[in-house]
Length: 144
Image 1 (cartoon, helix red, strand yellow):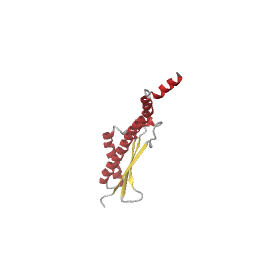
Image 2: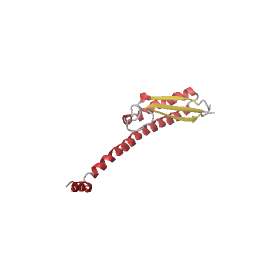
Image 3: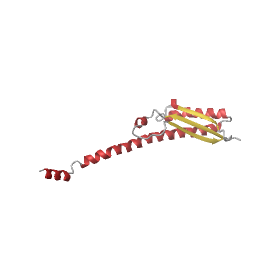
Image 4: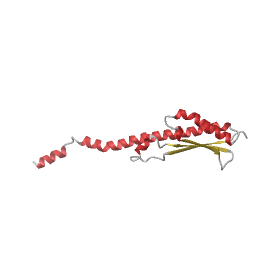
């Protein structure tokens, strides 16, 4: 009786799908959450880079470094409303100044504290990048 019961157990495939599902589901969910988390992070990073590039283009109109910096800050302030889905305006900082290494270049750097994005709840499960996103754009000074 024991031998026939053991043989029947070896031939039965009823629970194979449940075991395969239990093994594959956690890996699939981790992959899905990773795609979602990095997609949100890359969207915020791209948005920050776009803001920096737009601010650098706006600063070209300035005649002095002070005027260029004020144009860059004004451009970021006016365009942040367009990106309010991903970026919180109170967590954006703008640095605009001449490049110390080259007097013919002007740099606009934007830092964003992304710690309020929903992806940080996945930190125990996924290796995520830094919560501070820094993007910059450099332009040549015009007019001389």
